[in-house]
Length: 417
Image (cartoon, rainbow, N blue to C red; front, side, top):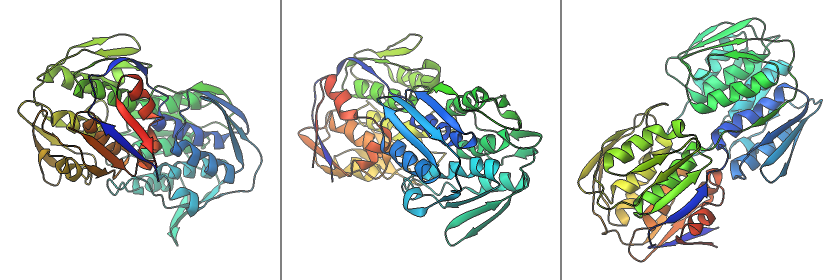
């Protein structure tokens, strides 16, 4: 099993590009199940989660082929309606095939999903929404089994914004009879990107990015072409790598508005930033101060950047309070940071971080989930000696060759078995 060794590194300097968005590519790839033909995409990252998606699409009669970041999904006629456990268990986003399968075929069996152990992330809002559209849904022997004649448009009010639930309902509603309105919808940029591809296929989606999304169902959709948006979480992670080392890093292929909450917190901490249309530069700085952060749905501070920002705060002057409001079990990286000498007091959803600049000591650590992996790599850049990050297969689910990008900036990092 691969591991990563990170040595205390000089201040990172240079230019690096963020890849395509994992959290955007996954629902868009599953949306191809709505229409036969050749779907073409640009800016698709090479990640384990994309590989898992390709396997699942293949089992459902769709063939994914790749040439670098350009991907074709060929969707043909098929009788496959079952998303099996052996594939679904690797990736929580697999549940996103449920809406398209129900909409196109009127039936689906999807294994209950797996993924990172950062919280319960129930799919009940997905299922309740599909029931309101006329689907019969039951769970049996670890599978969600859905049937319908044709889904019917309705108004769905989510108790709380759910990214996956919004995406599943949007895809299902694209072929439903009548109009579906999603109230209290998720507003993430990935929702907008999915809506843009559904519309490219001939769908009629309006309001994406706001709390109310309207989808007018159509009789059929057609395969189309699309370029996936940049990955805002990777862009943020690369900026934080520059920040924690006191370096100067220009991150290209970045939509600035998508990382604005992070940029504001970096400025509050004392960093100077230069914003361009599709790039951000973090300028060399020493002696940043602790700031408080609360995660929340977009456009607030992203939960997927919480662990990486906590790494930065371990090197700040003063104390910061980090509140995790999205997932109830997303402080598992804290115990690993403490192993390195960080002064952190965690409670259920709040962590008090007392900065100890320059005091961390390298040691073997264990990655517990995708973003925790990135957090441990970042602290390895500033910990004295050598930090060995184990179980980095988590990292490969969401970052394309992160070690190579960091090494290009001057990081002392290598992957080995």
